[in-house]
Image (tube, rainbow, N blue to C red; front, side, top):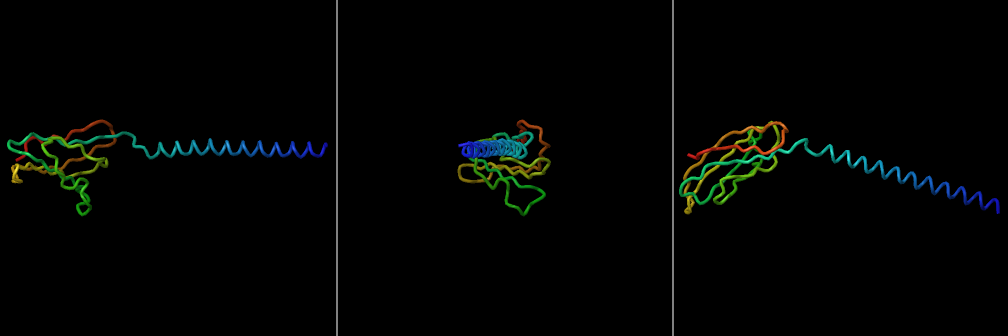
Length: 138
């Protein structure tokens, strides 16, 4: 009987330490995942928008964005039809990077009415919304 009690006590001790080890692994795993997640989150999110004045007679606007330092890469924004919208919300753009932005206005027959190309540079990670105002297309 004494031998069985010792074996049961030893078994209970092993099981308890195993559960403690598993619990410790769980806590460490959760902390690790939280630290990993915080490392890949941006410090601040900057949303870039491109805005321009409406062109008389325009029924469709198009936009295209490319990185100036990587002209052979696919465009950040390929030529995109915007309908009558005169504001475009850009996808995530890398900070401190120069972009070439082209905006064009077309009439209902597809005739080019006006266009404008500008180079704009993104800023560091400050957060918020930044609107690149193109003004009038020519």
